[in-house]
Every structure is written in C-alpha cells, then in structure tokens.
Amino acid sequence: MPKPILIDLVSDTASRPTQDMRRAMAEAPVGDEQRGEDPTVNALNERVADLLGQEAAMFLPSGTMCNQVAIATHCRAGDEIIAAEGAHVDGAEGAGAAVFAGSFVRRIACGRGIFTPDDIRSALRMRHAKIPRSRLVALEQSNNRGGGSVWRRDEIVAVVDVARQEGLALHMDGARLMNAVVASGEAASSYTALLDSVWLDLSKGLGCPIGGVLAGSRAFIEEADVWKHRFGGAMRQAGIVAAAGCHALDHHVDRLAEDHDNARRFAARIEQVPGIVLITSPVETNLVFFDVGGTGLHAEEIGARMLRQGIRLHVQSDRRIRAVTHLDIEAADIDRAADALEQILTG
Ligand SMILES: Cc1ncc(COP(=O)(O)O)c(C=O)c1O
Image (cartoon, rainbow, N blue to C red; front, side, top):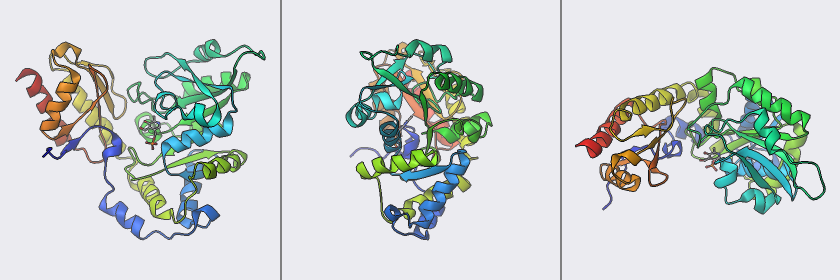
C-alpha cells in the first residue's frame, strides 16, 4: 500500500477546501449561470472585474480555459503570440492555441520569465503577407517556470507601451496573480487595468476546488462568451463553486504572505544541504525550484525516497525539483520536509 501523502509540496493546487469554504459553498444562493441568473457567479464576476480594474468578467471552470478563451478571442489562424519560454500557454495546454485559434507561440528566452520591451521588439515579425502576424503578448504573473517571479508594475508598463505602439493586444495569465500582489504590495488594478485581458485563478494559492475568472472590456467579454459556450464552459448552478471564490477573496489573500515565508524557510534550509543548488534565488513567492545534480542522486530517486516518508515534491527532470507552499502547509511541515531531504542526502 502506498504511504499516504502527509506533506504535499507538489503544487498549490493540492490544498483542500476549508470547512468554512465548504459552508459558504453549501449556503450559496444559485441560479442558471448560462442564463446569467446565478447571483453568486454574478457577484464574483463583478468583484473580480473591480479588483482587476476591468469593465467585466466571466467565471470559467479552469485557468487553462481562461487562457484558451482569451487567446481564441484575441487571435485568428496564423497569428503569433509572444510569450516567455516555458509559459503555461506554450508548453502546458496541449497546444490549445494552435488547436483552437490556429495560433502559435514565439518564445522569448528569459530565465525568470520577465521580458523587456527590447525582447518584444526582437520577437516582432516584419509586416509582410508571407510572414506570420504578431498579435498578442502574454505575460504570466507570477511566472511559474521562472520560479514564481513577480513582474514589477514598471516592467509591465514598459511592455504595455511597446505593445500599444506595435498594435499588439496584451493578456495576463494570473494563475498566481494574488501571490504577486501580496509579495509586491502593488494593487493588481494598478497594472491589470492596462491590459486587454487578465484572469485570476481560484484553485491555486486561493485554495478553491475549481475555477478562474477572466476579465476585460465589456466588448471583449461579450466576444469571449461565444468561446466560453463553444468550449462547454457555460455552466448551470455554478454559484456553488463561485461561492468558494468569494470566500477566498475575503479570507485567503493576506495569508499568502505565510506561504511566501514558508517557501523562503524551505529554501534557506535546503540551500545548506551539500549538492543542492537553489534555482529560485531569491524566493519571491511560493515556488522553490532547486537543482540536485550535485548530490549524486537522480531527482527521481530523491522524489521517490521523500514520497516513502509521505512527502511529495514535483520532480521536473533528472536534476530539477519544485516545491510549492500553500494553504495546507505549515512551518512545521516545512521543517519536516527539509529534515527528510537533508537526511536522505547526508544521513
Ligand atoms: C501559470 C499557469 N497558468 C495556467 C495554469 C492552468 O490552470 P488550471 O490548472 O486551473 O487549468 C497553471 C496551472 O498550473 C499555471 O501554473
């Protein structure tokens, strides 16, 4: 029998809804979402639109669907999307941009996933009938593969300026947007209001079981609604899950600072272990990537030995591992996980 996972650092999607969240879900007033009659979904949409400084928003079942609906709304077949190498829209959505919108990603190589106006200019295509059309710039806040790195407001403004000059639309994947807000102290709307589309994931650091909310201008959301229906993302009494989102916005935002403290605590401990090199340095939010190439053990083997002690990490290659902190992880769990890793590698 496999040992139960006691400390799950595989992703911030691992957290379970709290009792209070479950209660809020059970008590939510609901209606037919597809007909615009679910009061809880409508309240969540209004709240997120306001939070992100946008005119309107729509509740969707997942972050991936938020990205795909936005891309399909912005792009036509043959269009190109400029994004950081390793972006979720590029490598982790089953090539959805190509499948649904006939569009593809032009990657910018940048370690932390934060690119510059010059990077965009170099990625831009010449305007010519035989050349693909650059159409959309996609940012990830925080950037997952870049180590939970946070786009500063001035970096976003600089990218917005060049995109506007070049007639490109701007989209933000906000899978961990509230982590960035808490880490930087910068209100989301101070930069998300400048974008053409942006979404917030509810099922990661915010601790909900399901859902994301995509925001934009009223015209954008009206057009996106067509894609929401095409993808089968229009729901019925969805207020039962939207209620978790409202609850999370009330109770689970400020506490993200604890997840960031725990991620730093874990990094500080494992950095001392011979052979481990932190890839995420400094730790900005709740993700810690590290390289175990110098330990003499394959990452897979380290992951398996940790799992035998009930601790799960995300093994990403033969030497790269990710640990993610979240609502269900406490400082004591971090100490246990760090102790176990140290013992495996030095004991
Ligand atoms: C940066 C980023 N974007 C999008 C997603 C997709 O979100 P979902 O799992 O809700 O579809 C993820 C999920 O891990 C992510 O990390």
